Amino acid sequence: MKYSIGIEIGAKLTQAGLVDKFGRLLARKKIQTRKERPLQEIVKDAVDLVDALLDDQDLELRNIKHIGVGCPGAPDKDSENIMKNYVMGFYDAPIKEEFKKYYKFPIFIENDANCAALAESFAGAAEDLDYSVLVNIGIGISCGIIIENKIYDGFEYAGGVISHMVIDKNGPACSCGRKGCLEALCSETAIIKATKEAALANPDSQIMKLCSNDINLINEFTVFEAAETSDEAAVKVVNKYIDDLADGLANVANILMPEVIILCGGITSLGDTLLKPVREKMQQRVFHREVFSPDLKLAEMGSAAVLIGAAILGIDRSK
Image (cartoon, rainbow, N blue to C red):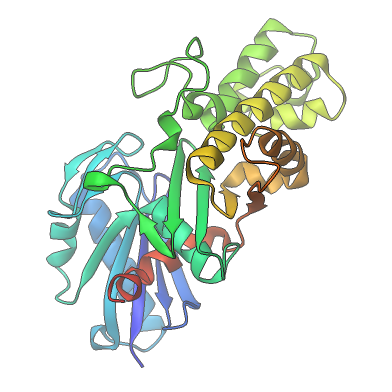
């Protein structure tokens, strides 16, 4: 049997996984990315992971049909470079060229959120659906769009950048140079920043108690935990976060009208604490809500989504 290899190069972790023709993840290995290093070193780490993975499974490169790589940023499909990646500092990075130094079989490069969206469409929260959108909430925000079971990239493969859709033109500055983008309001980075500001402005709040008066201990969950105690400062931050996220997702629904919008990322471990109020507000703001409003669901593939989506890129593109 021939297998596929999926590789995820992320800001925190680099992973490699062995996937069969049914999209099942059979084994995987991971390592800290240490993103400050040159691309060549990061790719070599991924290659070493693949070697170790194959050794463990008693397989050789001849057993591999193709490799797919998922990475933050917008790939240029002509040259297979990552053209722009704020999170990892890749600009016109020749990622496919680096992998070609080690492998002779086909190599596919794709945005990580697109890979995750493809995996969820293939065997996850959007299985058996033709139209879906995945929104990954992490250090930044990324998006994968599936139309008729295919990844939609837009012209020059630069579409789907919902993270830089402005929600509040007077909002906080974004890394893209604009103000009030969805990413600047609703990423993990944004919620941590808003929580710290609320803690400093309200030193007697439950937020300060939870972080032992050290705002450097605040994470993306702190304000939600504080809000459960009805702490006024925390509730205000949480309500604004939910409202802004619902606005962004409603905009996505109104533009694309998918059958389902899927949320993933660490903050989604909050489950219904996050999902239920966001879904309610989002669906109230969908223009065609009397006829149809997309469901809002959590991703089902977990931390394997990018690996599996990357591994099935060759299958998807060869149809």
